[in-house]
Image 1: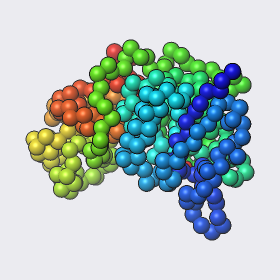
Image 2 (image 1 turned 135 degrees about the vertical axis):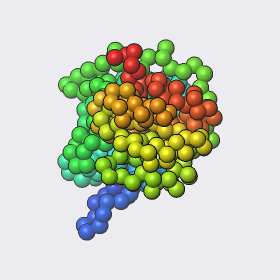
Image 3 (image 1 turned 90 degrees about the horizontal axis):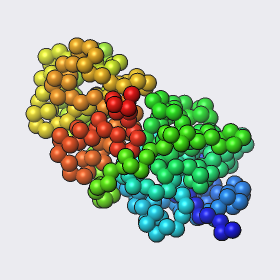
Image 4 (image 1 turned 90 degrees about the vertical axis):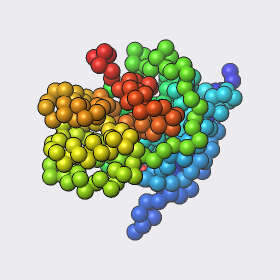
Length: 340
Ligand code: ASP
């Protein structure tokens, strides 16, 4: 029987780093021998490895997201591979998996992002299992952007990094795992993002993405008016509010937000609590925010909200449409109120 082909796109991260005594971990060359370190990969598929970058993922850029999206789209169009695995540092992995889910809404094969907490080249590494699980997911999983980490396959736009040193580095606070690699794989087929819900008309992968929105996690005592100069340079603000979407909206805050909105600035609200969803009408402070024109983004992660805004803005939609889509699920990234 002919072996399937899997494309591995390498971008860097701890997985390929080699520890040196007395020096911090930084990109090295271990990834070049991926098939030597993990020879079992050849039993699953013919593996093609391409190196798109070799960076600590804190240096990830929207340009690299676009490069990944274009390469994946090409593999899909040319039908060269059954699935794609992206190897990525864990620090910003959730931003990349979220961005790819919005840049590639018409996927017809799995795209699986993984990384590791310990380098491939050290003992007790989690890298081997994560790469093997990601390749299995790329061969058996649903046609959407997933993240495989520590025996679980998650929807890529639902996860967030939740542990610095635990092998289970990610949480999916508002959506269950799509698959679990135990003795056998168990897939939650009912949760796969259905083809019928995918946008039929969607612009091409954009040439550029706009700058990220300004993200402000609110804290008691914040001097919001001091941020007015920063707001002048931004097109959108994502407020990370308390609880269901509350901030102390005194006259000074209202005035600063009002001025920002008057010159076309868009204001979105998510909760800084990871589990649950915004409901701006639940308490008076949230309701005042909504009356000003701010829009709650339901149960989206920070990573999903930021990257979705950037992709929507890049498609030249007007403000009303951007705000409408920020409350609608485009790639399974949020739970709409009628799904509850
Ligand atoms: N700093 C590393 C990175 O994100 C952490 C990791 O890969 O786990 O590239």
